[in-house]
Image (tube, rainbow, N blue to C red):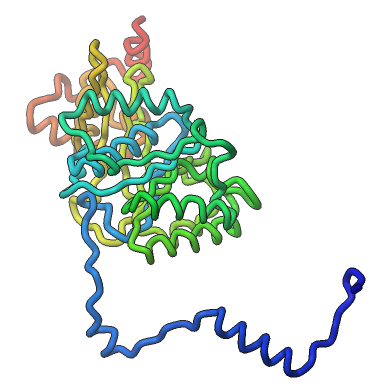
Length: 346
């Protein structure tokens, strides 16, 4: 019997047989000439949710904890499964969505989805929105940093014929090795994502931002992604306002012009528990805030500090408001100290 670490010299015939077997098992790269490639009939990429979510695309939405990422991913998933709209995004037809949630307790997720159903006039058809959630499993949720975890999610995606896989979120579902912050760990996840794209699916990763406001961990993720969207708090955000955030496109390979203009979104819930989303361009929101603060007596410099804006942005809004006759005073009479007292109710 062979001892541990003991090696055996293979015969030339055995080596040749092993080499031949390895070539059969390892597929060769397929290469085509230019004219053959141009002449191929390839399936066109369609828009799943206009303007940003495409078929066979890899995407990410990230933001600080509590900013509203789950609200957004559920809104997207539900609207896409119904073929309806969410904010200023429109799905032309229903698509099959697989939502892999690694964080929320099942009762909380159930409550949010029930509220969405009650507040919408349309529901997804059977099988168009499928959910994987921790509380319904016999063991731990799949770990996307491992081959077994990737295979588990791929198998479910094939079973439900998913066109979009939503991974919410990387912190919960990439746990092994270097975790979700590590470039080496992301390499394995990115290879899996490319295989999903090859199979005709799109991926939407949900991720956290760090203290600096950027996505947490390695920046190598963006190299592969088609669209990166960040959710940010408005500068004058009031927690009493509930879910309110700005949506900014940080990367969008196929978008330009007005399609990438940031918007501000706000969720309101009435006394009957019915939820409604409202949105407007950030430029309009900025203009309204400048007018309000100017009429509260702040100078242009003070407004720039308060709203974390460039002075040139404040100046443009100020002049527009002045031309429209919306400013009660053209010079500050109270200033920041008086504004702070008034905002605190003093």
